[in-house]
Image (cartoon, rainbow, N blue to C red; front, side, top):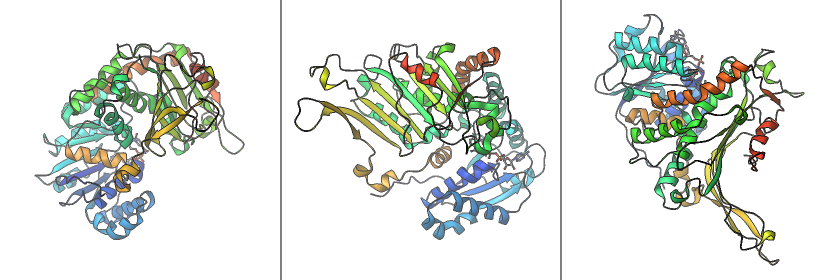
Length: 484
Ligand code: NAD
């Protein structure tokens, strides 16, 4: 079975920050993969724009190197890389001054989709938005794409929204959360709203609790400078984890359209109860004989920034009252493994007696590695020896049913960039959603700062601080093992 590639209109994608790390590792390789899939025909163009002095030839070399380093499709690269590079050009430009802007404006062509990717620090968003208008490069159809972090608290997020709103309508602003571009995350919506099987059980009457884990085994590495100013709460919890929580918890939207979906997500965030201090744990990793601890990596001996956070969140509405959402994320944990686990309640009465064991269904949505969905069901343990029960997975990785081509799906950046070109905002965060998320996380961060609460140290390769385990143990529950 061959993947279906939906043709897109001719487009120009201008990448501000086109020589940066994100462009090199994610955006450019993603565009090349879409080129290989046939979605960059019709003379689509990519224009890198950044401060670095270089000409188009040198930029094409930069793009070639980035594709060869970060795209593993050698066969396509051997055949198509030169044709892809022919569609790429570069303009040296200063977001804060006038250098380069007339040249960029001169490259614009009417009658095609135009998207500007702001792959620069948020401090430049205002300058870029203003210059785009001064140089008459943005019309009502123009789209802008902005990266995380979208602010560092409610106040800064509001200020960013206001800066962008000065020149662009909300319908033109695409705030990226690449977790929403993951195939399995969208599959979660398909599973929930495309089947009769799950939705009737999708509430506190049948679901005991939900666990969301985004665990990384690596440390902050070269991102220490940025990360130490953010921490796990701002870098992961306020955006990615909350988006996952919303998709699990939201009511069925009337349609799969951008505002219908985002309205429902917003209602979930607004229904979140404030978090008591005893329901949050923050940690910081220690080093080993071979690996530096967090403090040494970020070169700040007395930093209080957390590299781990765990929260017990409660949603105050009819569907979820009494069903907690336990979320944890951190670096230098046992493994790189991210999943959502929907843990159903025990059957009300076991007809098989105590010896059969205590079992329950768990729906697991694996985000990385090995994206897929698995439903744990209870069956009889095969063989003689009486009625003993055992949990087995009903695997829904789809590869067998759909064929390999269907599961070789685009990565999150490929899908999201193409959604920008198509003008589909469903998988992008709306301004009010981002603000509501900060409104919930701000008091947690503020209480750490006000009370000067230091993160608890945890061992590299562990599951985080013991207090995070206690967050569930004290409720008679336990975290699932962190394993790929
Ligand atoms: P980077 O520092 O590697 O690159 C910054 C880019 O901006 C460079 O191309 C630089 O030339 C350009 N630039 C800086 N000042 C400029 C100016 N005055 N005028 C024109 N161009 C200018 O940064 P990055 O890691 O690529 O990150 C870009 C954005 O993406 C940031 O907002 C970051 O938070 C976000 N982001 C990055 C990652 C990542 O993995 N790198 C992940 C998520 C989000």
